Length: 273
Image (cartoon, rainbow, N blue to C red):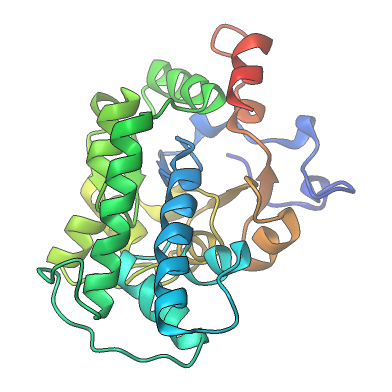
């Protein structure tokens, strides 16, 4: 089994040399975040959050304005309502928590979160989603080897996204925001959701891999004691992912595909860019 060693130190630029990359088939299981790891839905989430918060900030006269950095610092990887509370708190704004059943017009944490989800669902239905070819290639390789896989997402939209991307049947376990809320599991960066997914899959985190693109997600997996935490840099930055606890960082999961039979073609990789 792959283990940390001086030879696996990152090269300049933040990425691990190809010959040091581990064979994920040698682990007991691989647990994947969804948005930004398997599918480019992080872009839809970013768009939805920006659209919604720009409206809220403008209506309430909140300063400074919403920026892309707010997404990575306060929203990315967290449960929806925790993200709303975190971002508002960064502007010294406190509103009642409310209830998940709150209408989207309610000025509560839950109402604002539901407002964002309404925007996201509209975008998903209008635009659809296609999985990253490199991620599909890695799933193909793991499937062929019989390596168990799971999805660990803070999103309550995970099931819909997986179905839209044609990936739902690949995973026996989908640990999502619906389950997290039902079972009162703490949001990432707490380890709860990754540990629960490992329990549901029947594997030991100490012999399994976690794959994440969000700082809070990497922190969650690292706190859960996973044998290997892989950061996928979709814009967060390799240094930030390593600081959060990633053992290695890649730009795309195609880098981890070992078999030429499952590696995505150049055309497929170009389409995912």
